[in-house]
Structures are given as C-alpha cells and as structure tokens.
Image (cartoon, rainbow, N blue to C red; front, side, top):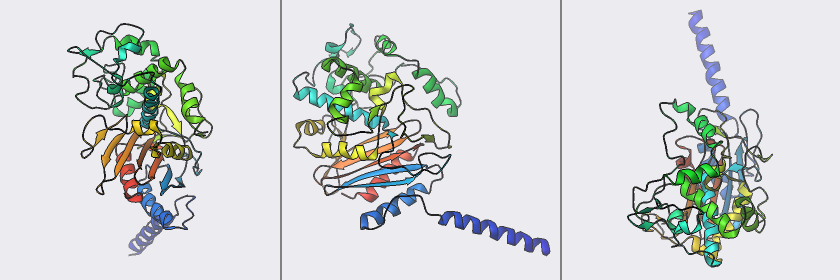
Length: 376
C-alpha cells in the first residue's frame, strides 16, 4: 500500500511539472495591446506547440500599416529572442528577386520575355530545345522550362540514410562551381515541350541569375545591392557566400533538432541563397504592393495557368481568394529554414513568416498560420 501511495505521489509530481512546463509563457515581444496582437499570439502559440519549432519572426502589413512580431529563439542552445533584424534564409523566395530583376530588364528594353535563353549563353547549346522549340526567359520564371530541378542532374544519394541527405547535398554543392553548372548544362536532355508543364526548378532560377549578370554586366551580389538592398533600405538583406555569414543570422534546424548546413552554395545562390529579416521583407513587400510601380505590376501578371485554380506570374503564385481578391505568394524551404510570403495588392495587406526550422510540414503550417492571421 505504501509503495502504491509513493508511486501516486511520484506520478502527481510528474504531471505537475508537465503542466507547469506547458504553462510557461512562450518568449515573445508581442505587446498584446490591440486585437491583431491577440490574434497573432493565439495563432503563433498553436504553431509553436510543436516541439521541433525554434523561433519565428513575422512581418505584417494591414491596411498599409506595418507590424513586427517575434517568438522563440534564434538558437536551441540558449534562449535569445529574435528581432525584426534577425536574418533567416529565404530559400526559394530568393527566386522572386531574380524574376523582379527580369521584369526591370524587360522595362529597360534590355530583354524580351520571349527571347531564346541561348541568346545570352556564351557557348552553343543545341540541346536546349524540344522538337525545335527553345526555352525562353519567360519559361525560366514561370516554372515551365523543362530543365532538371537540380544540377548536377544525377542521383547523388544512392541508398543513403535519409538523415544523411542534407550533408550529402552540402558536400556535393559546396564544390559544384559555375563552370560545372555550364558544363553539365550541355548534357541536359529536355523531356517536355518548354511552356507546357510547370514544376519547381532551381536550375532555371540559377540560370536566370547568370543571364541577368550578363545583361547588366555586373555580379548578382552587386545587382541585389543596387536594385533592392540600397534603394529599399534593406540593411539585413544579402547573398550568402561561403564563409561569410551575417552576425545577426539565426541557426537553422531540421525536425530532429539538428543544426543544418547553410545554403551558401555557388550553384544555388540566385535560386535559394538570399538571406533577409522580417523588417527588410516588409520593405520588399511594400515595393510589390505598390502596383503603380510598373516593375511590380509586370512581375504579378499571370503567365501560366488560370488564376481561379492558381496561376504562375514571374515566379509568384497568383490566385483569387474566396472574396475575389488577388493573392500573390511564394514559399521557401531550405535544410534548416522555412518561409512564406503572401500579399494582397487589392487590400494593401500581406504577411511574411520566417522560421529557423524545417521539416516536411513546416511550410504548410506557415501557410495555415498566415491564413489565420490575415483573412482576405
């Protein structure tokens, strides 16, 4: 009887500790003064209940006014609340910068969207066509180029343990140069007609970046500064390069809590290696919300698919909400970071969410989280 009694006391202590742990307030800078604060608190608290989550920074524009919220920590090793200046990998949201730069090049009359991409390549690539139809600049930004998602276009994993895949990717792409990229581009064989099928493509985005360097006769790192970071005053936005990480950058983790490699690979810089902060991304969002700006307006024009079902503009996804308003969005997922940005030009509103954790469900949960907070 005594043993049973002691066991019950022990069990109650465990339950009490568990309850106290659950009642601990999530670190945040949310002041909880207005209704939006409360909505964000409730929504983010539910998102962060997943034990794999580390931190999240959120930027919101609602009716033209800006708000910033931060939760959790920039790293697991110690509690350090992120701020509006904490830097995260944008992952595939990076692609929208290259597409926006292409829109500017079109308006500058430097290129046409229907230009054959081989016009801007130094070597001959007779393989970059399908039944006589070439890949155009437009195909690079509306996901219909038919190019392989990754270069090199071969199996680099074999029968590797899934837990090893991030490190295999890092070991291969850290050594994969621009010269390797162009060499392997000669061996690509298109399987579909360009312009016919949309699918995610890092290769197309990277190739577009290289073409923009040729068109503007400048490095992509400089183009990012000249056309975005400096005019929009995005002080925390940069192109990640090997061995040069910003001091304000959060650590990225996978769903098992392991620190993940940063995507600072030369062959994916233009496709996935821009890093930024929530405060900077609000400035980028404001640029795109202003469709009086011809560059932003052109960037949002649907070029493949139907808006009713979800169309593709210049690397942006465009659809109509239930209320008939346009939604323009892009997701991002790297080895250790997840991101989502969606804005509604007709409402002058939008939201960007940056998280330093990536698992199979994080991006979809960020989308669901944005829908709870910003209801068009």
